[in-house]
Image 1 (cartoon, rainbow, N blue to C red):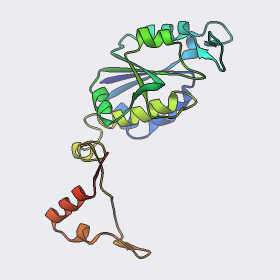
Image 2 (image 1 turned 90 degrees about the vertical axis):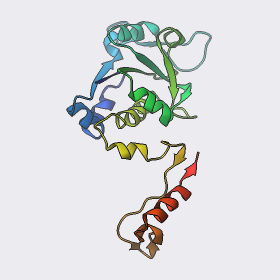
Image 3 (image 1 turned 180 degrees about the horizontal axis):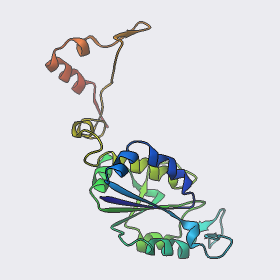
Image 4 (image 1 turned 30 degrees about the horizontal axis):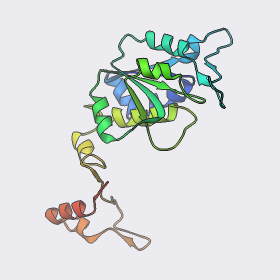
Length: 211
């Protein structure tokens, strides 16, 4: 079983995803255990303070180290602790495969201007970014990463589905078509309905492109 811990200020953002594929199947089949940890439960005071102004000046607020430290200490198994930051390693399919083979993943969802660097330097094992842009927080990136990881777990999808798709062999998957054969004058390529399996495979390879 893969244990997934998510430290966030907005736990409700994750609730609906527990009810849709691939998460609901993974939970139902005891393939994952999903723990949503509300950072406010470790606030510094009754007002729920978890952030403060940055040293050195600047705009916005920074998540303070004390609540994050306490939240992480509440997790018994912290094999991989991932800070979701714009300056992290860019997420890709090979990293999704690597993470899917772990026993425990903990995601720290930053908010505002980010996370106190001391938490990243001393407690995180990885920094991950989903691209060269900035989100309001780490929740959307966490969901994106988890969708990619959970679908790779044995028993979620047919093995062939995850082996022959975009990024699995350093290629982007070929175009896909379904019924009807013609729609508004737009036709499915003849080769795909020819029944010639060798030619179909050649077409698929020719129309997959390297990335």
